[in-house]
Image (cartoon, rainbow, N blue to C red; front, side, top):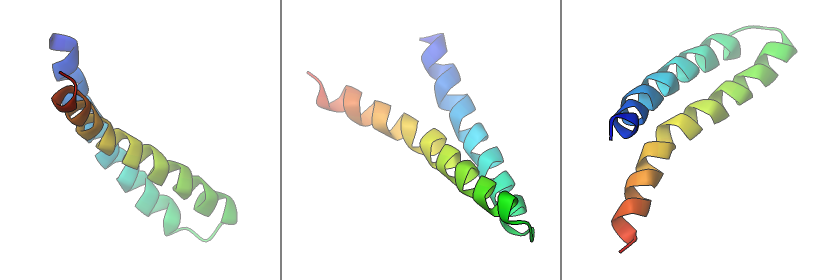
Length: 62
């Protein structure tokens, strides 16, 4: 149960960090950093939506 609590607390924090890195990379002029910003956006969305998916999965399974 502690591991599940760790996941629910750490993943939203990681998503905030990823979104901040996304914004910082997106503001730069270099094309490589703009491509890297897409990676940070995908990682942020994955970290943000994983707890929601876990709750939905546990709620729907009998």
